[in-house]
Amino acid sequence: MIIFEKIKETQEHLEKIKSKGLSIGFVPTMGSLHEGHLSLIREAKRENNYVICSIFVNPIQFNNKNDLKNYPREFESDIELLKNEKCDLLFHPSVEEMYPEPADEKFDFGGLDEVMEGMYRKGHFNGVASVVKKLFEIIKPDRAYFGLKDYQQLVIIHKMTKDFNMPVEIVPCTIIREENGLAMSSRNQLLSKSEKKQASLICESLKMVKIQTGYLSISEIKEMVKRQLRRHRSMKIEYFEIVDMYTLKPLMTWAESNHVIACIAVYVGKVRLIDNVILFS
Image 1: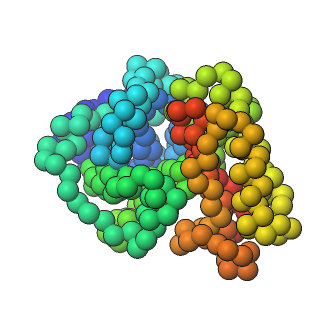
Image 2 (image 1 turned 90 degrees about the vertical axis):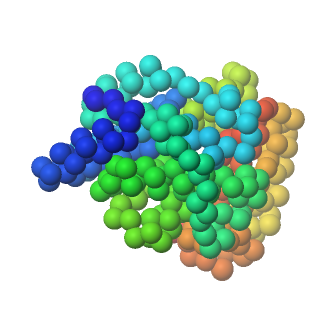
């Protein structure tokens, strides 16, 4: 596996790859890799001739400075994991390399960024779109792979690529879960053993939502989830919404949409976790 830290050397190398007619799959990450990331690498390898992973902890998408400071960084072990998956290239730029000038591009997401995550993380998606757009411009992949766990991010990145006519196919990939059902996340390692056990209730609650869809009203389901998670003092729901999969607008009744997903954000202790389940599509 080749490792590049500079944009210019990465672009020069990829020009040679493209000149051979090879397709490029790209998996952007912030490192601290886990099985969820590796599943994206495998999917990219199945569908492309050449696979690139980026590791870059993007400072402009963090609202909380402590969150940025505490974000797990395990670069050496990440390299070994990528080598084991036979990733072809790792792009690992510095903040100065990615942002030689302050990032000031503003995006219009048509309201997609104003609900759920956007209610609590102002400017987060603008930071995400800034870095993803720049990475796409550097790497020029044929396909880019994102996990469904960050569903709102996936919808916003898809809109951004369409708005800028970027010739990149956005490929959504299945949520990978731990044995207790907890959606895999780099943040999971910040949980204590007891907190991780409690966090399994998030997935259990979403399973109940799936079962009760159409039998209970949306308001009844919301109350059911709140009641279930309130049993643990260490767990605090930030939001639980049932929304249209394309507009992300919260729904009041099941009749409002044929494409519905339930999304949740929960604090377990000091660790913020998100998850979702597609109810019907």
